[in-house]
Every structure is written in structure tokens, then in C-alpha cells.
Length: 135
Image (cartoon, rainbow, N blue to C red):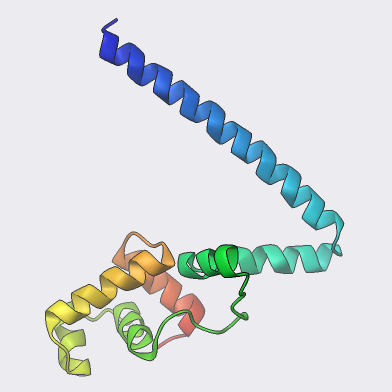
């Protein structure tokens, strides 16, 4: 086995152990939190946490601010873009409809996906339908 391969395997194994440690810690914290709540409240809190956008999770972790359920983490302009994506519009169509440049739409979409922790346009469309409703 080559030396660089051995180093890669060692780093990979160390990373897996670290992730397992984090998972055990997370499971213990979840059990403690669930024990402090009624089963219904625990399920509701977990659902809220799962739907929290990445930016909202970071705000909560850093500043201890929680965005109420149903309130969008997007600006009005970002929400309009997200709704139009969900409706199947292209960047050019969105730009025309909102009187923006295509580059602005592209930048908005990058920011929205990054802020919400989404990787694709399809994920954004699904998120939009779930959180912003049909356009």
C-alpha cells in the first residue's frame, strides 16, 4: 500500500470515529430534551428543528433567536423568486417578471440555496411549495 493511501485511510478512519462520537453525543442530548417534554411537544420541537433553514439554525445556535413556525426566512424578493422557481419559471422568465437582471436572479438563487442549505433548484422548488405555498 502506498504511503499517501495509508495516510488517507488513517484520516478517513479518524473522521468516522469523530462522527460516531458526535452522533452519540447528539443522541444523548436528544434523549435529555425529549425527557423534559411531553411526547407531543417533543415531536413538534423536532419537526420545527427539521424545517429550520440553515441560516435560522445558525442564528439560533449563535444568538439564541428562534424564528416562529410559518415565518419565512426569506426576504420578500427572495420569496418571490422561490415561488417562481416552484412554478417552473426559468431564470430569464423570473428576471423579466420581477424586472431584474438574470445575473441578479442567479445571485439571489445562490444566496437562497446557501441560506436554506439546499443544493438544487428542485430542492428549492419543494421547499418553496412546503413553506411558501403554491404560487
